[in-house]
Length: 313
Ligand SMILES: Cc1cc2nc3c(=O)[nH]c(=O)nc-3n(C[C@H](O)[C@H](O)[C@H](O)COP(=O)(O)OP(=O)(O)OC[C@H]3O[C@@H](n4cnc5c(N)ncnc54)[C@H](O)[C@@H]3O)c2cc1C
Image 1: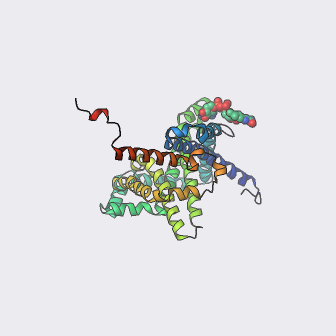
Image 2 (image 1 turned 90 degrees about the vertical axis):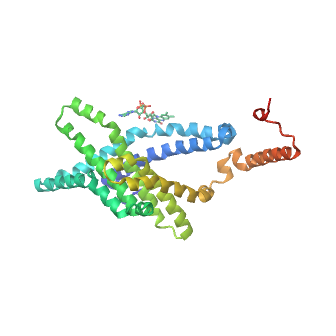
């Protein structure tokens, strides 16, 4: 797409929508990452020599310039709605009747206890079985894709009166659904990220690397599902039993990934000349080791100060 080999109007529009979806996700992610790193380093993270605050100041504006993130997500949502509308442009009355019947069947299946009851039956009240159902890439893809599709369909239905309304009324209706519009685009962008990770995962040949990256992909997918758990429950996509296992499986993945955290960071290949933060040179470890050794020697010599609280009157 980037090479220009298939440079058509449709390709350019696809590229524009892809960029509009990924730019907000990347720039917000960068700010969250820097904030997390700053907090993890405590007060040292606030020192200029460790660069986190200056990197944050530099990156802050990226969410606004080159396309404000919120406005870009509106563009993405508009494209999703346009594509959805196009799907129905040439559909005849029979097609619409079939569509309405499918939506009704969807509501009947997902909005009633039937779908959840089927999940509960399939899992037989076994938490491990519930986890197994959520762990597979296909199950995650289905949940994530289904959410985007349903959100677009609901949004299109809610905005449909705008096509026959006055400009002012149409604008008011559009404004009322702004937050849904943004959330829909965000869900779509996250699905793109998940799909890109999954596609890249299939190309990893080393089994150990594939296993760890598979956990990371699952962590990403399940974190997205966990964040929107109420949506999945309200829309009948998950039974209470499966919903409950999402968080416990996320916790298990975090424990599994912890020993690989440094390797995953090192895989980005940032050498000291790129990082240029004093805290990463080993000096902080030296300082903490020295402090620990000092207190250990004072405890051994019995010269540690007696805490105020342990003094008896
Ligand atoms: C450091 C820097 C460098 C820049 N360099 C350039 C440059 O080289 N060339 C250039 O042309 N421009 C440049 N800009 C301008 C930049 O593109 C604009 O700042 C950006 O488009 C946002 O517009 P604004 O500042 O008017 O903010 P506003 O549009 O007023 O946005 C303020 C808030 O309102 C929200 N908002 C705005 N419109 C809507 C809407 N329709 N619906 C819902 N919410 C909305 C936004 O999400 C944001 O939260 C630069 C800006 C900065 C800060």
